[in-house]
Image (tube, rainbow, N blue to C red; front, side, top):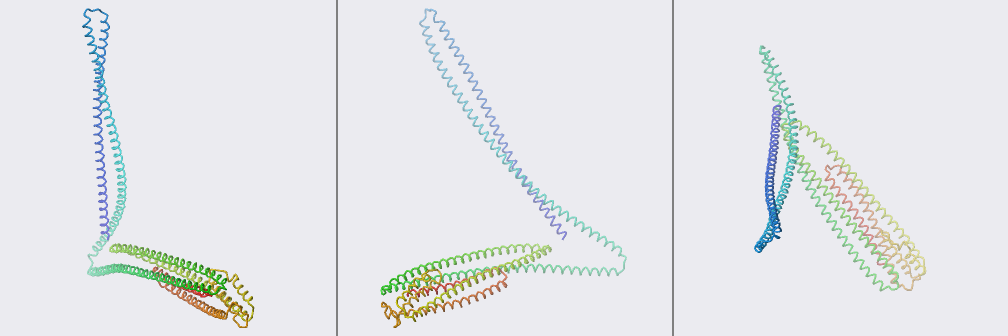
Length: 636
């Protein structure tokens, strides 16, 4: 192992030296390229400066020649002016002198003056042309000089900026190369230190082996004169060495077994990955089941809407019957008007309740959908996280299996890490189970409180309705036994109609039942005049009185039916409470038995949905009973 380690470190050192040389060579090549570019730019700059100097020399020569020509022209002009002045002076001096030949001399003088004037004009024009040409050449040369000066400055600025950029890049590259070289030097230093340490270890081991060999040689030299017994001892030592070799072979077989165990663990991890995939498929199937449950809830909602439409049709029929009753019974028009107003109010209240129920149902559906989507997102995220973790673990395991062929200590460290991770995993699972158990217990308590409050409200309403029914029956018995006049009956009816407890409209089910009992009271008050001995009003006939008694009997039957329905609801509520307790026990057992959080979350969602559906079914049944009781009482 030591020789192999030294070879590995030597090879790593060679690789590091090669890498450092490669990067240094690249840095030198880059620096040489930068220097070549700088040299090219400098040579180009020098060439441009030489061109500029040559153009400046040409401009100076042209300027000097132009100035010489201008000086010559100026001297010629001065000379001609002097000659002209001399001619003018000669004319003035020769004019007063008498001459016999004045005629021809005057003609010549005039001719000379004309020639002089013509020459002066030509000289002036020539001077002007020469001066304009000189100035044009001077301006052109000056413009070209300025243009060349601007180009020179632009080229100088460009070359300077390029040189600065190249210098900056060169400095940055040099800095990066220096940093890399420093890092490589540090790596080389660390590698050299490791190599030196390994060399020292190897030297110490070699010294120990040499000392041992020297000691053995001394012992062999000392024991060379010993008899055959020592030879037999050496043979026994040879046998011991053979046994040691066999032990080493056994150790090698144990290591191969450990490698096979690690391979088996890898296979187990692959199997677990397949199990996770099957769990993902099961979660997708549960998703489909939940979507089917949502469709069933939508169907139930549609059925409820159909029932509501049927109730609306029944209500329309009842309104038609009320209109026919208005046509036939003109004498009780005021009472029927009041009843119509009350029915309209009840209708509006029912519409409001229906709208509230629809809104509540839609809100519940939306909340369930949002919750379901959130849980699905959470499950997908958790699935992705678990897959990534499993993939990372698989990569780590592959790397570890490769390293385990030569490193046993890393195997032990990895096993310790796996044990610690399993401990933390178990701790997290226990904490998660405890938290979910607490959540389920809290939700069960909330549901039980809601159910108990609903039962208390129903019992209270039933008790109030029973009290009202008993009071009404007592008053009916008093009215039937005591033969009173029509005024007493009218006072009873008016007192029942004008009582605030009868006419007050509230949003709960007690208002519905009080309305039905008020109608029953009115019918009972009108039916007490059916006895042949009592003083019946002149407006009511025997048939009407019989109909009133028949309606009273029907109302009592309906009251008994409602009481039976309320009792049935109490029984169903108690059974529902028992079911909730059973489901809570099932949830607790499932929470204690389950090992994975995903199944627990899905089962918890399913059970809670079942509990919520049962509670909603009970509430819907109670509302339907109250609505049907109200609708049956409206024809009276």
